[in-house]
Length: 233
Image 1 (spheres, rainbow, N blue to C red):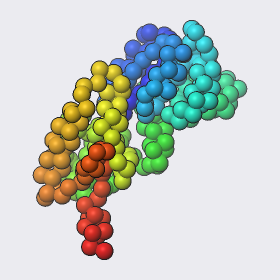
Image 2: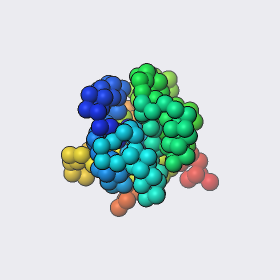
Image 3: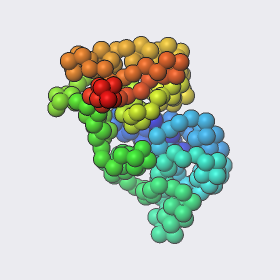
Image 4: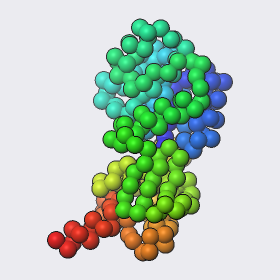
């Protein structure tokens, strides 16, 4: 999961980055509102965490600019401004949630996961595809109830495929999801990741193929049983 953190307090930003990284989230940080707007427009983040007291512009203005630009990325305001009017204003401008400082780490992480699940159309924390169960909160995968070990990149691939199950995803989309536009390798690395992920899934599911290649376009996640039924009909 990719998080854009817009926070001008360097110690606060570093603390948030460390706690979220420990939870397996990829955090990209800026201390300027204008740069936050540019990054939010350019890259496909799963969530934006926004402070209101920025040096170059108000966090409210950042929020308004992103929404005016039709950026639909969920936004969580994280601010020391705790008055009800502040919260109403932020939510009214298009924020998805508002959490005041100081905050509890577990609450922040829980809210992030809940917001992202809702934004992807998944109220629950797990996504089921055939024998596969992807747990978005624990970032784990089970096959018929048995834990399947995946690397961080392999999990990231399967997470994105599961969140957009049935939709063809391009290699560029995978790169964006895994690297957030920062230090991206060549596109062919995605083929390598998919190959390794396919082998692990096939070994754990008695040879089932969950990831289909859409030639010239990318990859898509499908339930093998549904594919068989569709072909039979």
